[in-house]
Image (cartoon, rainbow, N blue to C red; front, side, top):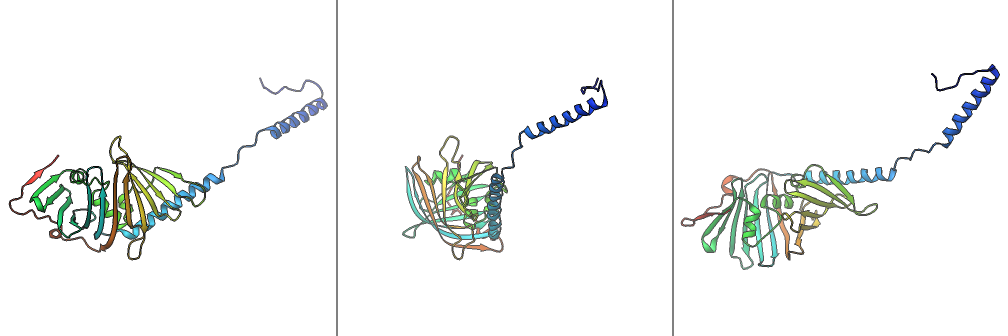
Amino acid sequence: MSIFPRPSHSPRLFRVWQAGLVAACLLCAACAPTPPAPDRSDTTMQERIRTIWQAFRAKGEQAQAPAFSATASLNYAGPKSKHRVVAKLWGNAELPIRLDLQAGVGAMVGHWREGPEGFLVFIPGNNAAFRFRDTLAGMAAFGMALPLDLQDLGRLLMGDWNALLPQDYDTAQPQGDTDAPVRYGCFTARGPIALTLNADGLPLTLEIPAGEGEEPWTLELQELGAPGFPPLTPQRVRMTRTAARETAILFLKDLELRPAPWPQDALTLEIPPGAVIREQP
């Protein structure tokens, strides 16, 4: 049976009923709620977030190189130790990488090498060598609990953020209105990290996990794109863990991006005869 009543009297009555039905439909349509208009402001913000990230990625492409060398001063202060050294770092983007640590008086205090087989340390004064499976653990064992291993430190100094971070972000949070920085979150094998970019796509801070349940490291990236350096290379990096009372300040003195990898003999760490390599956990 139809849900619409059929006419039971004259055609005139049917026409009156039909006209009333049309009027009722028009009235219902007029009273129906108007669907909300698309939130144009949110769409614009999402476009801005994407544009800033793309500008950041494009700048990173200018720093890609197979090898590098750099010299920097490093001041480290922790609850148990303090160091002020000159660090000479050189190597290939895909490893190995060498680092020599020199005290302010010119004495060599340590030779480091990171390669696929692990992290090797030689201490000249003790004629002792140590090998670690993990670079971060090895650096911490010698009083420098830094947040980056040698490979990632090299990428940071080269300004090669495309190799340092995932290709895309997982979350994004504007830190204010128009032209305010944006905080991007990325999920990595090490854990969640956060990078804050300004409106031009330049890094301001990088937050890196320090371990399960521990305060993360915050890296303040300063003096980016100084003359003679790639656009995303910070000349000054301040690394802090406030609660842990750890601070490291790195000042980049010079940087060279090499067009070809270093030969392997330039990246070996010679252990003198009589020095025993002690394997560490």
